[in-house]
Picture (cartoon, rainbow, N blue to C red):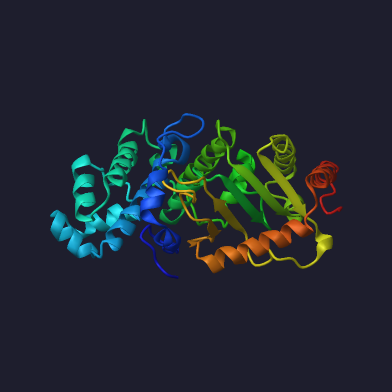
Length: 342
């Protein structure tokens, strides 16, 4: 598995930003979105820092300056330049440093001014995101990045063949699945992870919830996790959340046979437009979770492959109304003590 600057997993360079016309794109900045909110409130400081970092990379490379040369000229360590361009949360952007980098990279005044606005946003964020308190304790290092990205996603598409996605799990269901395999986690670790999972769900009732699009293998509805009471509560919750306009759940029935999602579960995140361009603040990202690690995929060919998988699932899944009927049928079967009846 290829490493990345954020820990375990795989996160490729965002090559698209290097192909943009810097002078044109940087003039598109507005400090407020249509709702009048600060940039950090609409896309999150994590994505904003990563976006700023990519732009400093573009500007440095456009000036023909290496990271080491930039570090020497700015009298900073090479690791500091690397952290700036990586969007590291430990970097505090001071105006004097932004001015110095813009001067070194021969940045136009209007571009410099807009970068000053963006970097100020990272300093003025009213508080840390909720998940910061868990990144060093309850969250594995390889999952912390995903949570921060999920928190700012515009659309979350998920396919789950075995279990209900974490964003839609009730507490009893989350506790049951987190305990497996037995012996992997302590009771304290299980309690922490369940707490984080339930905290993540606050995203779905935020003022600007992401569009959550879920594809469930029909087997998920009948797999007895935690017993009859747990499954009854969980399936009722699935029916309840489908009343929200921002959430869609569709079932991939047994009868369709083979389908494009049979390789693994995945999450497919897309993001709102960046403040400096008509392009997303973060490239589309596919996240594949494993028991002890994860994959972060965003190369063009990888994104295209998962777009094809999603298109295939959409063509085979029941529509939303029929999916609700399917969930009701599973709920009735479990309530009647016949979970194997389909």
